[in-house]
Length: 352
Ligand code: PMP
Image (tube, rainbow, N blue to C red; front, side, top):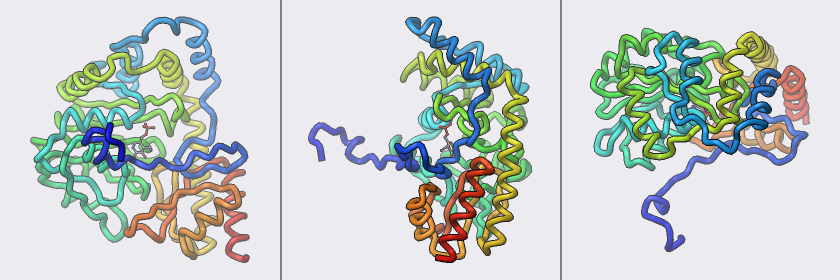
């Protein structure tokens, strides 16, 4: 262990991201990226930004993008916060709203960044096991001491809570912040944004990484009461007030103006998801009904073996080395051709 590391660096338990293979000829179904490219309008706007004023700092207030998001979400610009991917928005939210000595709650099987942030900022946490059908145990998220966070739909299960359940969580945690992480909401769940008007303790986070095929530009945002947004701005401006670069800003602004393109690709992903679910079920795989751009699947064979066999064949899926979900893999939805290849290769593995 390096003598130069701080106590924090020594004790850190960093997040292990999904594999990003260097080869380009693989089928990558392991990190829930969108299989389609960003729209031509989005790419043109980013090229224009590269060719214009990169010598200047970007806007520290992100005013134009906030106005666009506010109009789209039917809230005021003061209800919008913008960050480098929702990961950064979440990291700021943990610092702005959660504290040491006040345990927060989140589902036991969920986005594995939450315990990483909690450890980093010395926030104690309690993991709430999922119900046996993998749904979130809503009642056990009541009465947290320090706050609540969960994705909707949850990852890696793809299951979503209805707004009524989210409202009950909010009503049972009125003195704490409840964060609903909507990274995948566009693929079939109901957004909780409209509840932010009624519940000042609700923060909803979103990303362009999945629905808008822009994981590479790192653009996420949050919607909430203006007091929550101000809390996030205080943390952001203490860390890096020029947080969003000019090229990402241009891409995000253009993407929001090109919704016809993105809703078409989202619908395509949803159709492919249904096709893949059926194909895997017909191979006797257990497939949980998903409202996200991935499937949580129990194969009719050892999950780790399937993950490794697919990898040998150039297909990357996600296997979690966690005891509660040991028998499962998560498969991101790719193009039709990629999913046909996946099913074909699984058939060959079964018969080999
Ligand atoms: N929340 C959840 C549940 C996720 O799965 C992810 C993506 N790994 C994120 C947030 C972060 O996405 P991004 O930082 O790309 O916006």
